[in-house]
Length: 274
Ligand code: URA
Image 1: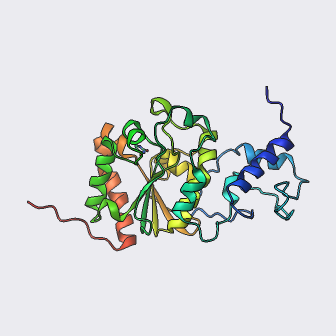
Image 2: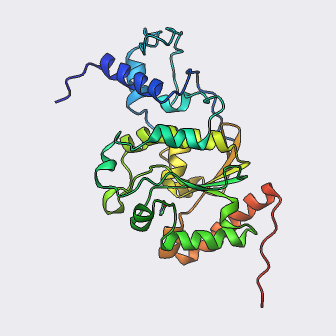
Image 3: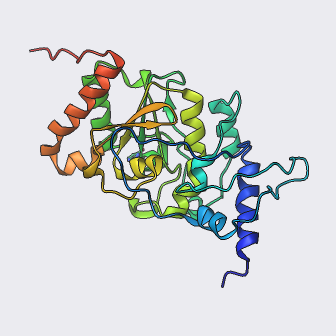
């Protein structure tokens, strides 16, 4: 049984974000581009905030001033995390450490933080490590990864020119979808990675990444291939390469999506030698 009161739970969450050094909170100003997508049902932290409408101070560590905490109406408290000043991938990786913050750490071999160009104009975000990634500590190195490499090269890029990471950094057992609380616990690191890299475009590979960053529970088929604004960066969701391995017919749709990304980045498709 959960012995914490809602207020204690909220305080724990706020302490958690404070420990992550995520700075101040501000009210959400997310936009969704032209298209409206349904906000996700509120997750635990936001639900707690809603239950505490009168609470206006951050009950965090003594050193932090009891700054006014805007009451947040956003879909999730995770939406309202401010940028960390001068953040770097090294610092984020250090903060992640040998993470034990969620149950996924129990069965992992290696944390898969992400890999690629720290100044990449293009970031791909997948769901979470699979078997090969867990063993090597690198993202997208299995079968789906090989297809992703082909997609990147078809766009006229090399893999080391882009950055590749995942929503969760530890392999979910049996490659199951990460649970909502696992996504919520790991997402701040992804947000910080994206902020630190500051790419020109983010491509979400599959529903988990898109739903985590856009805060929606809509199926990906409803908004795939459309541009959204994610914290002032263009974001587009397309199908996951693992899905393409099972459904090769969907490759043409993904190629159309990637062509939109190429147009935005001024890239020309790789010439296929005959
Ligand atoms: N699938 C993902 O979503 N990420 C990986 O790193 C590998 C497979």
